[in-house]
Length: 459
Image (cartoon, rainbow, N blue to C red; front, side):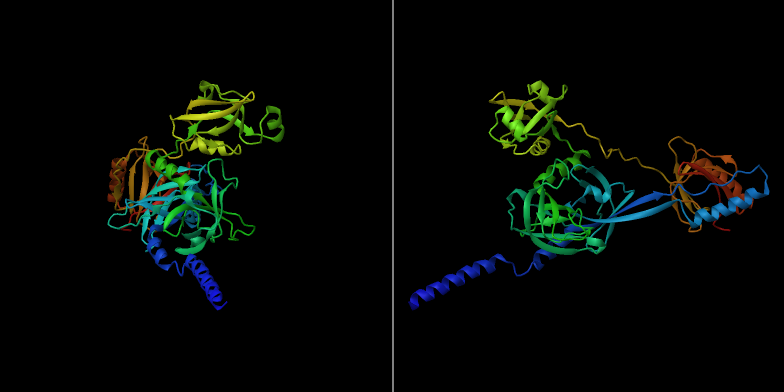
């Protein structure tokens, strides 16, 4: 009996040891190695105030003209027509050359994007491409002499409910915050579009975590934190991440082409209801019912018909209608897909050469053109020519007292029209030699013409 009791105790000890072994003592070493690859992202949007009053018009030579001009100049200086709004989010480095991934909603509409590393170094970022439907964006910074740490991708398909997750990001602008949890569910549909099924996690995710990585315990990115469900706006343990296996192909295309190339069948579909299944002789409600076929699409050429039910696509079972757009979109454009359909009580297999889903291009790739700015030292500004050679654009301002703002277009000096930086410089030098202390400039700002004065720096 005593021997049996000892065996029982040993069994309990081994079972307990296995449980303890499954729970890490600490994630500190792992987090320390991963944190430098996670960045904060500040997106600045210039909001233009078009509600400001315009200068009343008076007859030429009127004594009120100068009075009101000085008053409105003063008011515009006090209340500029352009106000910056800054949004904060997260991202992570996928390539040491400076390639960064984040959510589209973090940078959407931004006029300037700044990437802040874990050591607080800041870099201006270029938007390489974005995909609103998948809520992904790819940025590029020039790290110069700074050495960057890049993440490794993990296999999101290998994650199971109950696996550990680690989220690192910039919640509420705090920067470098770490939370842990588990995978609560996989392939979760939260109405975020037809092309992504999310990983659900209870790792705390708050505003500002968007675009940050979700790691597994091997330190690999298995998701991109994108959304929460909360009645209060704060974390209640319902966080959602785009799976890495869904994101990798999109990210590569955004990096290479500036847009996503999705496969296209060219059919309209709807769910297979119980009534539909019974009427068509189907054993269950699985599949996607083809309600219409685009006459110019790939499916029409391959022989698909309205009334068909798509059961499988490339050996992937279509359990629900919403499964089909995702698996088609993830397929390569121009590839041959095998589509299994139900038609007139028979299963038929049809091969379709996939087209490219017609979509809007959100980032136009342009060849970089070197622009030569001309510094006007006497006025404390830099300028460059306009595209139509009608005036000059203000590109830099060195004088804090200047009434000019960036992107103002100067078209006249003291009622003399100017066409390019050379004529601007020549006229400024000519007027300065007369001993005058200031200039009267006609400018275009927010598509409105304004008159302002600017003093020479020496006066």
